[in-house]
Length: 399
Image (cartoon, rainbow, N blue to C red; front, side):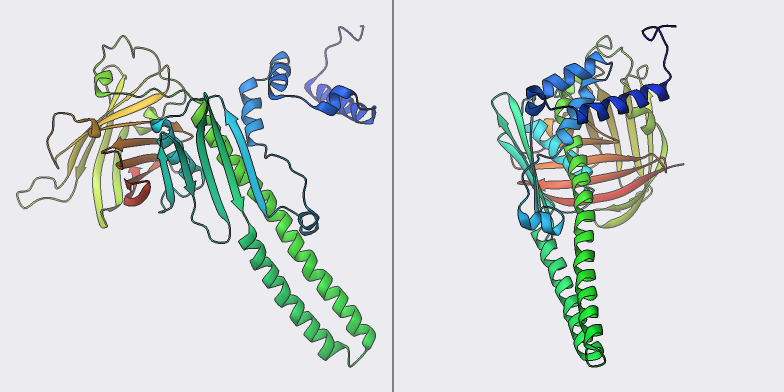
């Protein structure tokens, strides 16, 4: 059988690719190799070998911008400041900014904390409020694109490591000078060199290890931003929920989390600083095109009625992935005002909705799915001029 017609196994194919890479590394670099590849060229090459170009673009967005390290940064094992800027082919508006702010909070693992952030049509800013390590994310429109910058300043952490290392070296010098040197100068000098060298090596090892974790953290944030911005978003209005079923008569996209919501749940946690327990039921409506949530508190009024009761309608556009919900409860009656309609989309295993009350006040409600426990965290926050304050932190567990 000729080599052209031979069928190679997957293992043999992997070996061939590895050998080809080794041969290429030994070859003289060409002019084109020195210039590298653009993102468009890499996506085109990926498409030719059957690889999804979208995954290449997401991976490229996660790759931190390389910059020449200073002598100090090379000495200590990593940079003191990480700065990653990426440009996304996505228009930027107020609703997309709000979705991006919520997605960043969830990705950073701070959805339940009070941090600083603001979103609007002119851009989005957020920082985690950290003192030793401050993570800051900004997004702004530029022409028809969105420019995102993720910065993590570690100078505070470096100062802590330097102080701890200095204290360690001080005790090493004290021990070598007072305990070892009087007995034997050679032991004193040897202990001093070993102790100081060990302290410096341990500090550098810690810094290098933590630098890798920081890069992974920034990569995760950038990946979430990429998925949020590249996913098309269409704003729902209440009238859209009343559109004839022909528009929504398509199968739900695989990223829909509705099937995991449907069922009977028990809500436990804190709402308005009060411990509470509610019974919650999600069910399909109109041929699995919508989902209705009915929430009833176990607390009762003096008349015996539920202290809180709500009916919420959820809708989703299967073409765009945009979500909307209309919230009705027994706290007030109204003719479906705009502030009673939440708008949002999926980011990973979470669905975040924004209820815009006024130009400066809004309300965020976010469902975060736990695949391991098959449960939902439900976060609710009041937002005043971009400053969010927790209103509720509850967990939904199946009955």
